[in-house]
Image 1 (cartoon, rainbow, N blue to C red):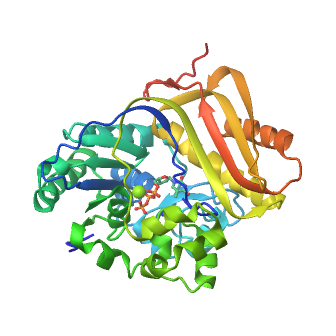
Image 2 (image 1 turned 180 degrees about the horizontal axis):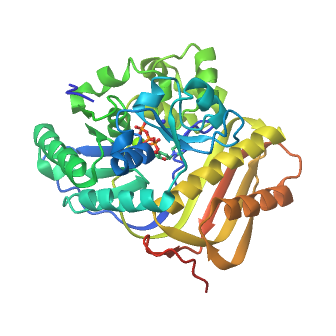
Image 3 (image 1 turned 60 degrees about the horizontal axis):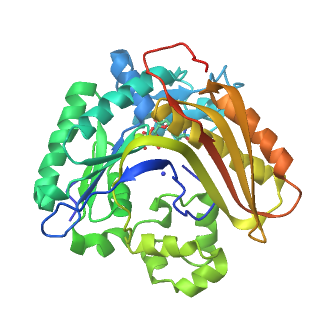
Length: 387
Ligand code: TTP
Ligand code: MG
């Protein structure tokens, strides 16, 4: 089977990466009818770009994020090199904790313009491969490599793409090849860094079964804890769990979770020729009126939409917050700004203001954030444009 070969929302995934696009899905060109999907994810992306640009950092613990200011800095780790991960440093960890774990690391402030440029160069290699292409974040994309005709041929093509990215962009990536998008994504994360994992159609159950449930994209710490409480440790445990019992515990959205555990995912790789909006939503594991949890969840959504916005090199004008309460009543409120923006602080100010206006003390089931009124800006252009 395998040759060589994580966002943390608080809840069950229900296809939260909802960037609305003008989509065209063509007929699957694979004559055998067998879908072969490739997922590519760059290794420690921001840190890898820093190590490429500063060869003196190579092989050292590099932490990209806020200024640690000794041990007193506020803010979090964006990412870190695998050398820093050996000390326990992780994305989203407080920078002060990262400093305590690895005071000798090289701490670097993020240079988003540079990462967007590197992302564009990498995505161009993948886009021009000739396969149907879908970028899903600043450092990951799917290709529908069904036209290669076999998993063996797809693996060969994947090796070539890895080589091209390494030689042209100077960074490594990990690739997964599988019959569905979800399994390809889990496979790309299987052997990191610099991995290539191929999971053939008959190998999906054996590949997934021993993996911890956390490996399913979208399962965060809270859902993981609740699954553990039900005795579900591995993806195999989840696949074998009675789906009705799962629904009773987590609600209907857990059907997606159960299907993921079986490797079922019929979604296609969709080309896009224009993003109309970027939206992210989270369903809470349990309906909640805990303002701390609600604000923290909104903060996670802000970070996610901002990363997508940056990855696509877009500016926005409208922010919309969507709240679905425990009675399944959904209310939305939007704010349109006079000028285009692309910074996280503006998203935060709008989103928090809208959330304050919408929140009436009722328990919340689902929270969403959407950016629209989008406009493209050249990554190399530095000035902010107005209407
Ligand atoms: P990831 O692909 O999740 O992480 P990574 O590429 O750094 O590491 P891995 O080898 O495990 O794939 O995210 C891509 C980039 O997004 C990452 O380099 C920095 C940014 N990011 C944040 O800013 N904050 C976060 O919490 C996460 C998870 C990522
Ligand atoms: Mg990555």
